[in-house]
Length: 386
Ligand SMILES: Cc1ncc(COP(=O)(O)O)c(C=O)c1O
Figure 1 (cartoon, rainbow, N blue to C red):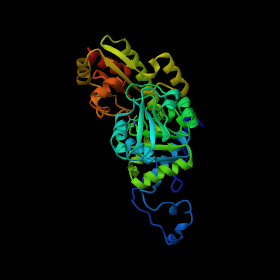
Figure 2: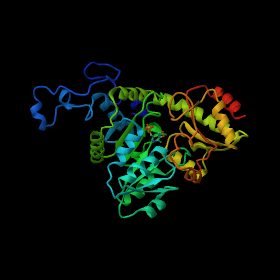
Figure 3: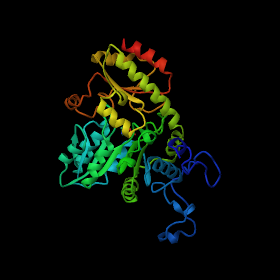
Figure 4: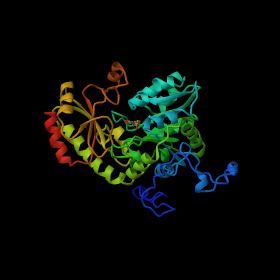
């Protein structure tokens, strides 16, 4: 089946017990184990005995986790209470004294996690300006265990070659982790390109309506899945049944939303590129030839997120204050267009000199295209920029 069909038919399209088309919400913390609970040591039969406590497993969560694994082409999926909880679980499978390689241009919360929490836990990391087989090989130490990338990256939409990077990581016995939040499995499936673990902020396009915080991890192998499950069950940052329902519901409309939002983003990127008050536009479809080529090889579209720099900082601040249709807000991937100001929002955790060095300027704005009419957005943005 094509991905568009899998979004709807993924094993949980009809509830086996009742025939319900909507995913039932099992809003319960615990499960009646029945009179046979003493047989605990034997594998539980499917159905009633499969669940004992909702931190360890819940049928509504299972529906979402199964769908996520199927869509990403992995062996198992795990749903967390936020994207950052999912990333913390993926990085949490490593130990004190291990070393991981990341890109410099990653989500600010991932940067903060690595530089605060995991630093205290003595997980070492090297952040590369550009992740490619050569830079990976040069950064490998005897204790290196993984490579963690985000492509396109946040907020500068830099492209990393998934296949080449994962191949270099595999050669050295490293685990590859890819944050696939911006693309979703509809446009990009890193596991098929050599990655071992995919992470998502499902708060974004998977949920799709700016009404839920959620995270997903999908692993290629069952062995890695068991390590993620130990983190999920052990730390307990699980996604609640109602929120699992909301993400499962969002996934069903991912294709129509992404198709429409991507179309609008492409028009907005062209508009910004031509505007006299805009200095630069960052969008995979407008990237330099090499980056564009890599992206087109590994993804099925440029996505619905772009960034642009105005000529002056004042213009950026005015834009955020004056746009009537885009919410000046954190986050992306919802049905409403969002204009984020990375220096004060998603990347505020990065010290200013470091941000400047990375090109995350005070004049940079990130746009997540929503489902509004593109003509209305262009008119509004033109007025706000002027
Ligand atoms: C690429 C990326 N990864 C991870 C996260 C973190 O997700 P959450 O906010 O759901 O914790 C975000 C949030 O903006 C993100 O943009």
